[in-house]
Each structure stands twice: as structure tokens, then as C-alpha cells.
Amino acid sequence: MKEIEIYTDGACSGNPGIGGYGIVFLYNGHRKEFSKGYKFTTNNRMETMAVIKALKILKEPCNVTLYTDSSYVVNAINKGWLYNWKKSNWINSSKKPTPNVDLWEELLPLLKIHNIKFVWVKGHSDNEENNRCDFLARQAMKNDNLSDDINYKN
Image (cartoon, rainbow, N blue to C red; front, side, top):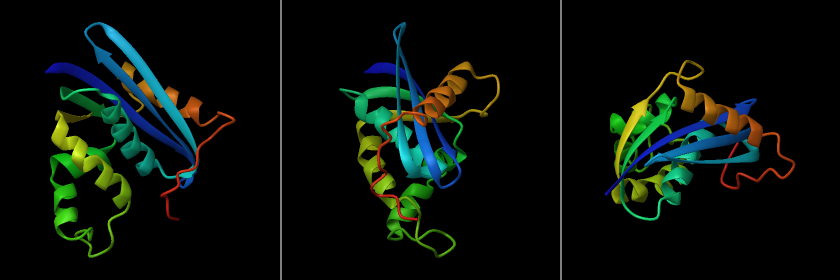
């Protein structure tokens, strides 16, 4: 399987507010970047959506090291929260409905396709690729043609 490094980040101006995500792919000396902006969403949705969009771009099963500054995403996967939420019919440990179920349900099948190692990196620090993703996300928020986050429920 191909070895891919992916960096993702989400951003929001206001939470909820205008949002965006940025993605950087690194593979075999090549680099690709993606971003998209949304009219009204949350930071956690953008962080999670960035991961989903990145994995959906891959055309075949890959070994992926995915770097993100989102402890929300990393902990949901690495600490098994996501699987516990699903097993509990999307009720979290606080006995409340799990936020962003639509995104978690979209992510689950992608986790079965690829061999993914989720790595947390400190945001707004010295990680060049994470900083680039943040820049891409913030630039995407400035686009004139922002998309609707149709599944966001305020």
C-alpha cells in the first residue's frame, strides 16, 4: 500500500460562524493542497470534515499518517470514543446526544478502507504543514462562493 502523509486543519470565525478546512497531501515527493469554505458551521465540524474529505480523495487503500491539531478528532479515534458513541446509539459519556453524528457516520467506513495512524500536533506552533493547513482553511473562509454545511444543526 502507498504511504501517504496528510495534514488537516479546520477553522471558524465565530463558533458557530464562517468556517473552512485545509488539507495537505504528501506522497513520494509530491504535494497537493485542498480547501473549502462554509457559510455557517463549527470548528469541530471543520476539523472532522477535513479528515473525511482528505480520506475520500484517496483512490485506493493506503497507509496514512494523518496529522491534525484537533484533539477532538484524535481522541475520538485513538481513545475509542467514536466506537463507544456508536455502540451507545450516539449517546456520549455525559448521557447527551453526540454532536456531529452525520460526520462520524461518514468517517467510520473510511477508517475501514485505510490503515490510518492519527497524530496530534500542536496548532499555531512550529509545524509548517499544520500552519499551511490553517492558512488554507482561513483563505477558504474568504471565498465569495461559500458552501452550506447542510447537516449542521445549531
